[in-house]
Image (tube, rainbow, N blue to C red; front, top):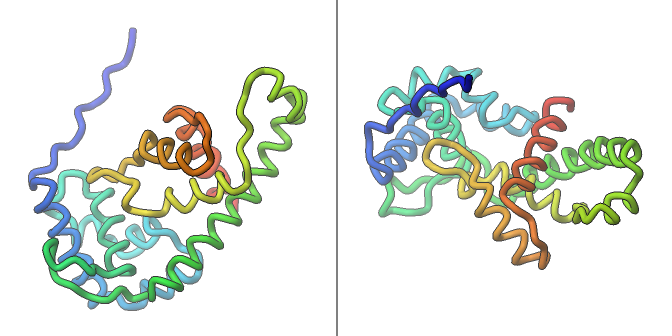
Length: 199
C-alpha cells in the first residue's frame, strides 16, 4: 500500500506578496546580522546560515513554507534587491561580482567531487564507452558547473524553494544542444547534493 504524502503547506500570502515579504525580511536580516556575509564567504550555504540564525522562526513567520522562505531571505540579504516594484531597493552585503565568484568556486568544487564519484560509478558499469553504447548522454564538466550555479541561483527555484528541473533542462539543452530531461537534471542535482555534503 502506497503511503500518502502530507499535503504541501499553502502559502498564506500570494506569490507577489511573498516575494515582497522575503525582500523586506532580507533587509531586516541584513541589518540585524551583517556578519552573515562572512559566514557565506567562509563556505556556509544559504540553508546553513538560515539555521544558524534561526531565520525561519525569527523572520519567516508569515510564510507557509518557512524553510524555503528563510533560504530566500538570506539570499536577498546577501544579494540585495535592485527591483523597486518588488520591494525596497538595497545593496547586498556581498557585491555581485564577489558573489558570482564564490558561487562559481563552489560549483567547481562540487563538480570535481561529482566527477570523481561518477568516474568511480562509470568504471563499475563499464566506463564511458559502455555508457555511450547503452545510449546515455554523458555530462560535460561545463554542464555540471552550470547546473551547480543554477542550483544556487534563486531564479531556478519556485516560491516554495523547490528547484525547477524542467527550466534547468530547457536552458542547458539550449546552450549545449542536448536532450537532458527533468529526470536527468534531478539525478545530477542529487549527485551535486551528495558532493556538497561530502565536502
